Image (tube, rainbow, N blue to C red; front, side, top):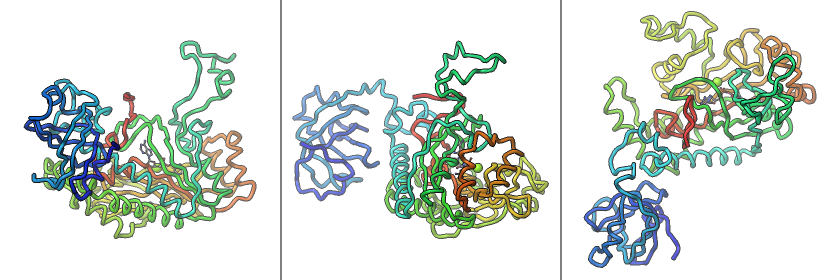
Length: 477
Ligand code: 4AD
Ligand code: MG
């Protein structure tokens, strides 16, 4: 008999039909009631076992964590908390689970503990909900761009360039590390390496994305990116997924409009398709917040926060305006920032971003026109000679969720800026070709997928929204 998913069974009208379900036992009470979960939903299916007719040998093996198959009739449930249940005619143990040794006990475990057993945490309510939502968000990204006629392009993971120019790359080599070939000057001889030169894991698919946009007009990438930055925060991963659209004939405003539309579309998709899981996560967050002092609790529940984001336009302000707001804020005057805002030109810290979003505007904010010194070489230079056509989107509780810009399409300006910033012009000759042949205004941005998942699930640590997080000194599983 074919297996039916629990999610579907829970929506079925019971007419004493015979069904078979398979899944993992969450709990087994009174030698009679199995709470079975197969990951299709957070809700368990109750299987009622007739212990007088079930061999003792089988009953003993229905333990938390065991994989079982149950066949029986679907009936309306007498008990509280579920509408249907299965009256089992047979239960088969597929895989035993030693209850003494199984790390997931039917009780609340801390997220820190569950991170250590990330290979099993998929089986908890919280992570079940998080990863079903994550799946749905990935689908929504593709759906959004597909509906808009964007071409999905696969940019390389191994790359010879550092797109952000920040030098935070992981090297890729097949050298025997205990015997690295050296050249005459004593430097590592990459000519003998697998690719014949020094290469790394990509930090961004943008540069290759721009090449494709110069032919297909509207493209996006969605893939893993890698950063060897030693940031041990709740917002940084060494391996994260990024969505990077790139559009020909777009200027900064078009770029902002697209990013805002995309974010609202994805949030709406989640509310329409994952409400059950989001409601569960909203409740989870509320419970968690009860541990905090009143003034640190969120003003809105997770659900209300998400609805707020789709119902309200994002605030758009320039970097210069933001600096003014921060400098004049009581927070700054009372020296409550770790980094005080004193002059134009300083890079914004996450405490500043969060102040703007959470305290000042109380809504998502798009900051534009940053000083060129604190942004990447490829951003289009504004006429003031000081700023570039950059945009960052800041979200409550997250800080920067999107980073993007209009690109410098003028060859001479781009080459000059690259030289000033020490970016090797010859090595990026292929990139510059798009400016030599049929250049045009274009723009794009990068959305950090895990930061989006964090926002929509209401989780607070980025390690809890990617199945197997990679962070400094940590690469398990
Ligand atoms: O601001 P970033 O560095 O921009 C770029 O990489 C551009 N090439 C994007 C583009 O214009 N095509 O990164 C973009 C986003 C950030 O806003 C943030 O959401 C996320 O990627 N991000 C990280 N997420 C998790 N861990 C990290 N270490 C991240 N670094 C950036
Ligand atoms: Mg950025």
